[in-house]
Amino acid sequence: MSTLQSYMRRTAAAGRATEQVGPFLATFSSDSVNPFLNYAIPDDDARPNPSDVDGLTVAYRRRELLPRVEFLADTAPDAEPALRAAGWSVERRIPLMLCPPGAAVAIPAPAGIEFVVPDSDDEIAGMIATQYVAFGEPPEVSAKEISRTRERIRAGGFAVFARDAETGEAAGGGVAEAVTDGTTEVGGVAVAEKFRRRGIGAALTASLTVAVHARGARTVFLTPAGVPEQRVYARVGFQPAGDMLHLSLTD
Image (cartoon, rainbow, N blue to C red; front, side, top):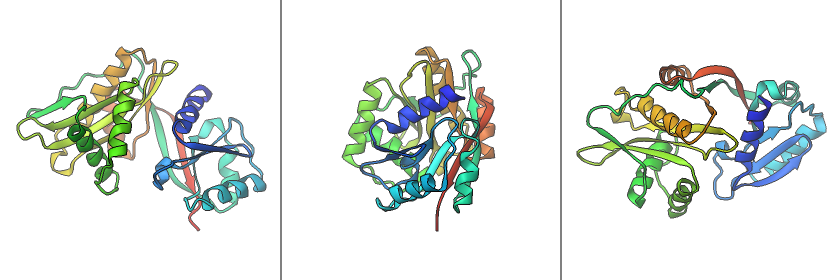
C-alpha cells in the first residue's frame, strides 16, 4: 500500500501548487475550487499533532478552500483519529479496488454505442461535460481544460469517449493516468443519464483497463463512489484491496 500511496502522492502534486504542512502534503488546483482537486495526503506513518492539523486547516482556509484529506487508511493509521479529534469528519470510506494483469474481463460497447479516443475539441468537451454532470458539476468546459486533456492524452494518458453511433450524442467517458512505474488509476468513468443501465460504464472501465494493461501497467486501481459502482467494477475484474479515506472540516 505504501508504494501505491506514493504513486497517488506524485500524481496529486502534478500540475498543482503544493505545500508541506507538518506530515501532510497539501495540494491546490490553480483554476478550480472543486474539493476533489484540492486535498492533502499524510506522509506514510504520519502522527499528526494538534498544531499540524491546525496548520493544515489554515493552509486551505486562507485560500478559501475546504480543508480535505484523501489517503489509504493503512498507510497512516494515526491520521484519522488526529483529524477527528480536531473536528474533521469522514466524508467517505470507500474500497480501493485492484485489477491485476490478466484479470480484466473484456466487455464490448453496447449496441448503438461507439467508443473513440477523443481528439477533436467537440469530442473532448463532450466527454468532460458528461463527467462534470455525472459528478454534480456544471457542464461548461473551458478551452483550457480541453487543451489540458488533449496534452495528457498525448503525454501517455488514456481516455475513452462513448457516443451514440448514429447521432454522435455524448453518452459517457472515462480516463486513466499515464502508466508510471507500472501503476495507473482508472477514474472519471461517467455515463449520461439517458444512456444508463445499458452496460456502458462497465464497458468503458473494461476498455481503459485492457488498454493500460497492454501499455505495461501491473497495478491498476480505482475507487468506486458507492456500492452500485463497486458491483460494476467487480464485473470487469476489480477486487477490494483496502480502504480509501476522505475527511474534511466543514465547520
